Image 1 (tube, helix red, strand yellow):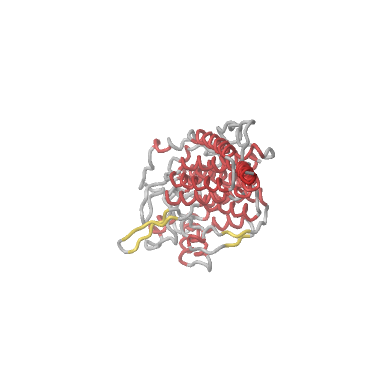
Image 2 (image 1 turned 90 degrees about the horizontal axis):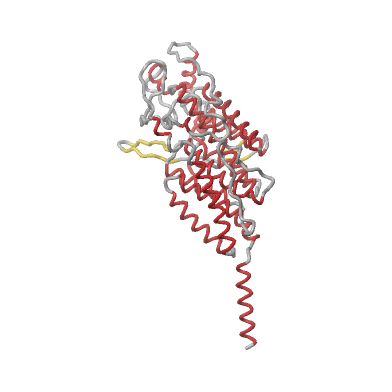
Length: 438
């Protein structure tokens, strides 16, 4: 009888232990979850084939949600409410309940992410796996339920805010009208002759800028078909970059290609190759830094969300200017006035040329990362390894962003003036993000 009583006491003790929050285990499990979930999100984004501007929107709202859900236990960090356009105070946790905010953070991320992509079910399935893993480390049902509930509340708050940013209404403003009139306006380019992408992106609400046109650049070099003119020299510079490349230029162009949907033609068969996007590339550089430096959850979320915010506004600013000026691509001019058989190294994307999107986005991210991590920060970028490109080493974020920018010249898809202009816009946006959110 004593043995039975003793056995019952052991069972009760073990059972009660299982119900106690295993904070050390939870903290260890949650430490690198945000990088992992951004990787999962990137896979869904790639398979859903979103354009770069839309990618920047998805990364922004998901990572803002993850950041905000961590703030109740991190009073040293400031909410973005009242700082990002239209974002109101976030829900507060119940003081009578216990929470694991790192869990809430991931739930908030998933809650937002699954509503911003087409294949939300893929994230839902991953969430089920995540919750099963949490159950295996001994978390109590009460703690898990409260943490999930708070994460959902934060996520729903961010989704309600996002729903009013003009994204759903942008297509009602009509499509881009192609014009064959003289003046160098953008027209669709080979090989797919696709319609203009996101010609109304300027109508989407910025996060830190006061308007989409806040950093609109001066007009580009005047279009001129005369040999020897400034514009003709610009075009010939691009022509030469492909005809007479320097060693390593082509590899750099391919490394930073970041075209989410490149068409490949083999005989009579055309298929599409999905790859990372410019926003995805820079988000993953930021994630690699957070992992290398062993950042905790809140520091990681702060770094990633601010980088994503800069990228989002960079695309809004750049796309506003692109469709304001409606400049044609080098391919169009070169084929008509220099060499009808000339082709760029990488595929010309389907939207106007000036200013350069990758230059703008990369510079904005480089400013944020430099301000938050440090100048002359050496890092390895393995973002492109899954797509057959080797790891690259950079000695600073600016070195990486400058290389991303000039890669568009090496690829034959941008004039040099558009690259330099894009860098200036991006730097202004990155500095604005830091000034408003730090």
